[in-house]
Length: 389
Picture (tube, helix red, strand yellow):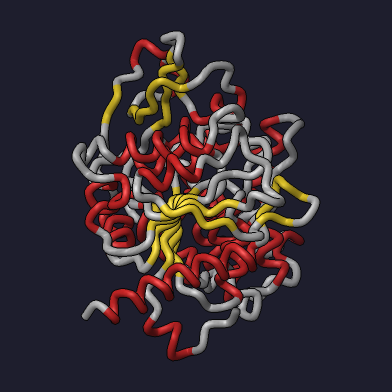
């Protein structure tokens, strides 16, 4: 499925609303085969070592960005050792003071950590890491800290707390084959009002939802401030993400944690209008297997939630302007409820049933099969558009 040089230049990019790790295999596959893709990523994570960084610097979460940059790194250019240290983590247990000292020692060129790392990679990595060290608070919790996150944080601080230039610098360093774009600028948290009226603030709480979500929203208030300060807000979609949505050859709402990876990307102001205005296929790939965030939510219900979220921007938009296809695998896939093709078609949404789930592994999608389906839909759209000219 390699894209020829001519086709790569003419092919409008695929654009994914994504976050987390579910798209890693597909991202790598597209990168290896030189298929242009824009990965529009959430920056709302609030758990683990990410919480320590966000507390210390009041910054967006960079973990999903780091993960996607690593997946897109050009293995023909970037040595395996560089990718190893990009994902290296400090021990999750131990004395915090000792672990902070160990982090500081990693900023020295003599440290064995840098053994076998070419200086063309080691120098910029150390520079951004030392930018982080220079501003690391005295009480910073280093347990479980990921080196790539610390490098991105240092680059963010060096570039006057701007995420775009920090991300661009790290993307160049890793020769990322594809664009990684934050959905918003600034620091926001994901929150939800549950069916019983309970308010949850913080993406880290979404993996253990006990009740259906009535309303999903963003807030500037930190989870540690409590739910009384969970004032909803609608930040505007970031300019580069907006350009990627508007210029996409195909928009994809892919597999992944439904609320925190997919719907969260659709919350900012402007996303719905941009999606409605884009004249391209818009494809939803529901999770196969268990999604802890919406385990009992049927595909039709998920489609309705996508439409409802996008329509906050553009209330009267018909479903077919916001979502054109649902990609399922009725033979291998495992979905809550049935695939109600008749109800989806009544909304003007086409159901594409194809073998996109791994045999005997209903939790995983086959990246090659998914990529082939998306490119086929893109080609069908282009050919139809040309025939109508």
